Image (tube, rainbow, N blue to C red; front, side, top):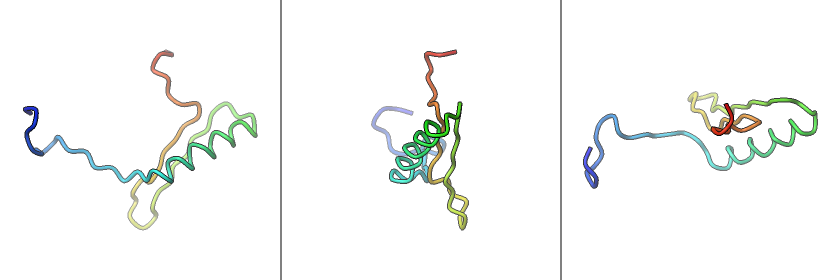
Length: 67
């Protein structure tokens, strides 16, 4: 695809992530892991009517510098 060209099939990404839900999930998940001294935590927020994923988070976060 050339720079400056319009949309083309296979090159667009549409997500259902909600900024507020994502922020709250990450914040509360990190607090819960710390409070209960858990090693890891995962959470997903889904709209039960549509199946849309509104937020996803893992603690600890992915660090690409650690193998």
